[in-house]
Image (tube, rainbow over all chains, first blue to last red; front, side, top):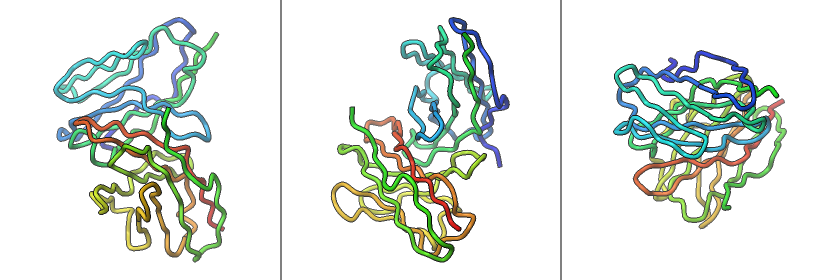
Length: 113
Length: 114
């Protein structure tokens, strides 16, 4: 039961360019969405979140866009840096995130010099 | 910067044994969570805990599992009789009550059941 889907297992982007990571969800009751970054042998690191009442949230180089009608969100990283190479997880929640998060399978982002 | 800590980083146990995984959430946080990630699979929610009781649990969190906040700082996950399929990374997370709940994760405990 994949309520949160990240259809690209990996993505390769040149340093300095824009990285766009995509996520789709099926449960229309989700009202809070988060992006996490994960390095091997570490826990997920929170990056940015967005409430379902918004369509965009920006924090430095990271911007998350939410299209509720399409049940789609995306994470934009610009400009991409070598340290951005990691696995990125999309997660969704009910009740503003107080409930357990439902994660996607992740996208491995590789930033090439 | 405050962070969630977990001990041990790696636990090896024999099938049928009890294990306790420990977490120290961020000090002003009120919600606590356990997740697991089986190798090659996605991160899965186990249980959330608020105000000294379970707030929500997934179908994975059966009678073999229990959680406790034994004092003001620790949050533990107990697996009573481990099975081979319990081998996974176990992550603790916490969040504060602000209306929006970003969950902050610890580094994880790798549990290996032999």
